Image 1 (cartoon, rainbow, N blue to C red):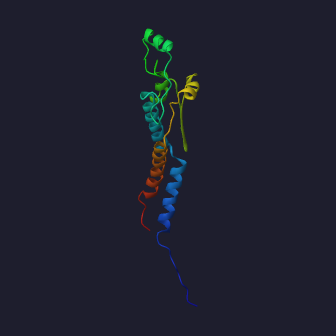
Image 2: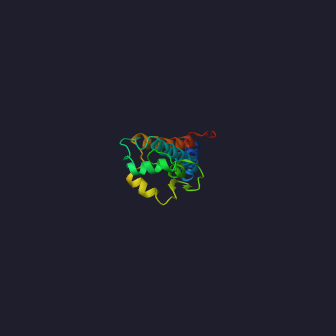
Image 3: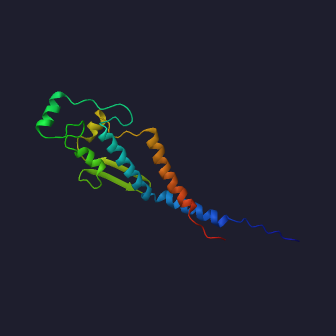
Length: 154
């Protein structure tokens, strides 16, 4: 009885590519660090524009608070009196930074007790649709690069 033997070429390469992509998906710290850098840039732009980035603007300081900032030689711009909140997000390894990067997540926060109240009243973490697409594309590119890494021939 005749025997037929079929061999699918490229299976080993495909397996290798899927393994590399799977590994990258569970070990995404490198791209998560880049996401943190992007968050820092976005938050800094929001502080520098005093909330205008992404639409709207922060409420103006009261005349009393503005006068007090000037008397105390603080930064008169909205949200930047001492600069501590901005630094806690924007300056890597700031003493008030709360950052964690894991194999499939990134978290950036502030240890300052007033950070949450400020975010509520004058949002400094504002992601636009473009920001979300850019971050999604960063992660997608990381995975695609893992897929495209050279694979030995069979």
